Length: 359
View 1 (cartoon, rainbow, N blue to C red):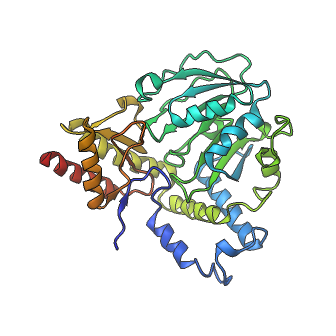
View 2 (view 1 turned 180 degrees about the vertical axis):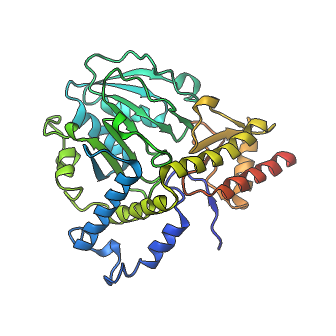
View 3 (view 1 turned 90 degrees about the horizontal axis):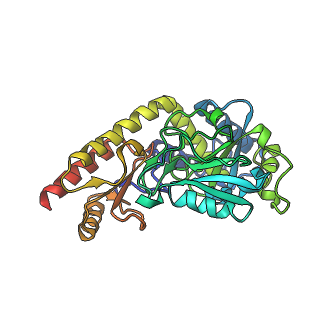
């Protein structure tokens, strides 16, 4: 069976080259006579896999020396709680609500202190990013929280909020490594890896040294303390070893592609192919305000639910899978992460044109 074009929002498409390499090493990783899945996380071999993955990520993102990289289990959802538990010293934080995940993180933070929703785009089904140039930042806020790319709604911050000197915390799950990023603008930047980097089951947290302290909320579970993971080099308990190994392979692949500048150019080219067609189509239309469009997740609709369903069904039969939109938006969504080739997007557009002519 040939591989399909997989437009899933996550777990998502991975580079074919990486999958083939992992398949070759499945039974015997570099002469060890065992799979990475089977080896001790305390072994020298795995330690090298971990350290190399971390270094490659630091190189790709040009992470400053005063930041730590943590590989943590539990995906992004665990971080919704870990962030307030570790950072809410004054028990106050400001949240900008631009979609489902920011909303969930905000709700979670309310358990631990006073979380304020200082801006939101819920009034228009999260189809835009609110103006964040002059927000009512709380004077005693411990941090300002954003979800930088909204997987479900297809929006992206193209300008970071003016936090008026407060720490910026950002969930970058669905735009992780899609373009260069100035890590020094954030106190903490994190994301689940299952959208643009690796298999599900892990989050990567990049956190500034001064924010890693013993001073967490009194009932913070040991596993949720950033200091525990930082001090143990992400080996406090058995980490998600196979996921770290796969992410490391993807980091190497990204370096080989030319790094994040090259990925940004490629991702913008792919997105332009799809958006240009949507803007000229008489049948399909994008759902996001133009200046706030994501280059990773592209939601679109026909305006007719039955026609949407017909499109998804016919697309799947033609080898374009996972195009059904999230239940809160309906319609379709094409997630075009780093590993989605340009040909995949072009082929999708050709299929959409054909569907438009027939319907």
